[in-house]
Each structure stands twice: as C-alpha cells, then as structure tokens.
Amino acid sequence: MKYTRLEILSNAIDIAVKDSCNKAVTVSFSGGIDSTLVAFLAKKYSDVELIAVGTPKSHDLEAAKTAAEMIEMDLTIIEIEPKEMVIEGFNMQKKINLKAIEVEFMLPFWIVAKNSNNPILMCGQGADELFGGYARFRKEGIVNDLSKEVDDLNKRLKNREKKIAEIFDLELSCPYLSENVVEAANSFSEEERIGDVGKVPLRQAAQKLGLPKEITDRKKKAAQYGSGSQKAIRDIIKHKIELEIVFDSNIIAKSVAKSTEPENIGWVETNVVDNKIKAIIKAENLGSLREATEDFMACISVAEKVTKQ
Image 1 (cartoon, rainbow, N blue to C red):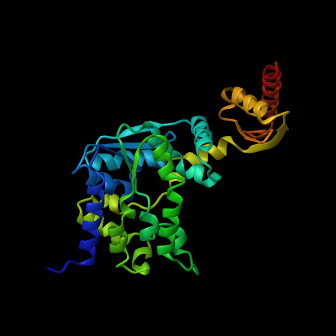
Image 2: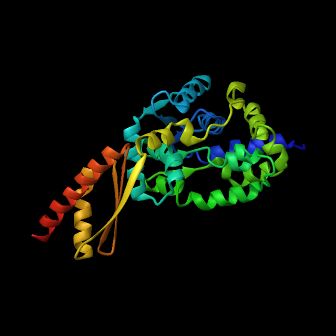
Image 3: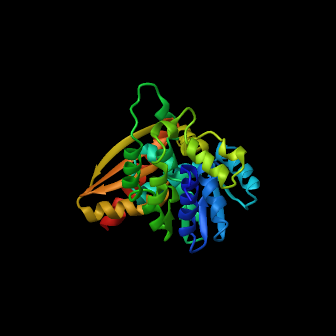
C-alpha cells in the first residue's frame, strides 16, 4: 500500500512523540498548534503535565486555557508578574550565556523546566523552522533555506533548550526535529510549507491526527510576545549603566561579588574577570538607576572591607 506524503508526515510525528513517552512528560505549552499537537499525541502514551507561563492576561495564557479545554487536558498555569519575570531572566543568565533576545524568548521555557514534575520535557521547537512558520519567511524578496534553518536550530539547542533541561535534570524531547519527521516534511517543497500562512502541511497533519480545527488554524505568536516576557523585561528595564571595578586580587573580587549578589538580584548583573567585577545595573527610569547604582556601590564598599579583615 502506498501512503500519501501527508499520511507519512502524520505517522512520523505520532511515532516521534511516542518514542519520547517512555516516562512521564511535561509539555511547555502555549496553546499554539506546535505544542498542542505534541501534548495531544503524548497523552495516548504517557502521563502528561501541561505548563503554560505568562504575565497576567498575556496571549499565551488565554490561548493555553482554551486549547487545553479543547483537547480535554489539565493545565498548570504559572502567572508571573513583570518584575518576577525580570528576576528569572537574571537567574537564567547566570547559568546560560544568551543574547538579550534569546533571554526574552527562552524565559517561558526556563520557568516551565524549573517547575516540571516529570522527567521528560517536551516542546514544539523546530516546527517553525521546518514548516516555514515565521512571518519573516514570507517577506518579499527573501531567499529562504528551511534546511539551513533547521540545522542552525539544532546547533543552538545544545546551548539553550538542552542546557536548560540538564540544569533541572530533565530529558529534552523535540519531536519535530526527529530524523523521520524532518525527512517527511522535506517531501513538501519550501513553497508548500511557507505558503501564505505557514505550516500548511503541519496543520493538515494535525487535523488528520485529530486536533480540533480551531487550534490547527491558529496564527503564530512568538514566545516572547505571547508570554509577555519581552514586554515585561523592556517595560521595567529601560536604562542601564556598565561598571568595571578593580580589586587587589581575583579572590577578593569573587568574594565581594558573591556577598553582594542576594542584595542585587533583579537589577544588577555581575561577572568576575581576573581581579575585576564587571557590573550591569538596570532600572526603569534614571532616578531608579541612580539609586540602584548608589546602593550597589555602598554594598561593594562594605563587602570589600569585610573581605579584607
């Protein structure tokens, strides 16, 4: 019997999810087609926990609620205030070296991993690259290469999603990046995948697998926008100042940085290089920036004196 391209793609996605369900699964859930499809399939094979993260009234939380109801699954909602979102961003940066835009994008995933109760962390990463989901793919005059997009993402995963999973002792699962799913997707041309709305073969496969049309037709919303993480960070942190403070030795610099860290979490990012503390102080306005800088320098002064005693 000869299977159609769509049947092969549908089966490949189902099997990729099944292969990751040898233990209980937590899905980083936004309510979009990518995460909802893997959650919907995973519940056939394992115990599944859905966690959605966002600021109050954010797009992802509302989308996640309605999607979870439609696929009849329980949902854990982590509603996080903007200031807390910023603090989590600082916590993540201490563990992982990320660009500012990556911090905004990866924050919801970080918070899901931190709160996961299951050993396998599943996500919808790779669907947008593989199936042409991003709006930038449809800009006039753009030359796209989806295979390169997927390859580049796979290279970033080890320093981003995989590392986050490892920090919290979890096993990362990205079904859309499995070899068979990539091969099945590549049987569709880039034009078919990118199209006018993006991810048409995936949307069709999701419907074939039983996902409600209301979900398969949902438009893409980037993680940093949908969760509210970008707005939270940029609304609070509008001004910053960078300082370089020299000490007598590397030992003193490390001791001072460690002793001042609890007082400065959320506003000051420090990094010790040789005998220097490099600090970035951030605040919502210039007045707050000045106060934060003065407080930081006072803490540094006291800590240095204590260290030298």
